[in-house]
Amino acid sequence: MLELFTEWIFIWFLLFYFKFTSYNPLFILIFAFIITSFVHIYIIFNSNTKLYHAIKFGVFNIILKVIPILLISHTTIYFKDIYFGFIIFIIYLIYMTIMKFNVIYIYEIMIDEYTNGKDQYRSNISKLYDDLFSTLPLSYTSVLK
Image (cartoon, rainbow, N blue to C red):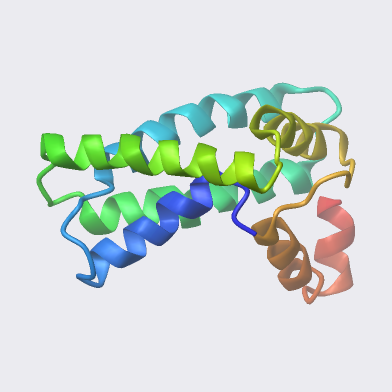
């Protein structure tokens, strides 16, 4: 499932980067990065946040937003790209409604996962990260968790 809009933006970036679409996601990537940066600051300064979760959220932002921004930063943003991003967001909201997902609830639970370590909701990306992270030597894993 693609419950997080970040996943949609990343797929759009891949389609643009590999020349499957001419609509540039750079504006939406920058906008999303700014928003998630504020969320990351909240997660870092929350007293309940464990180092593992703060790093995990940061790694997500680097992989899903910063690297794509750097890879296409030389491109030009047109109004059609911004409009297309708005349309993608509307389609995302319609998809979430059809799938009976509450968008606000998913993001609240996701932030709660990072700040309190609760596993009520884990995105596909979060699960993948945890699976990859569990392959690290025990000493690194125990220090960060």
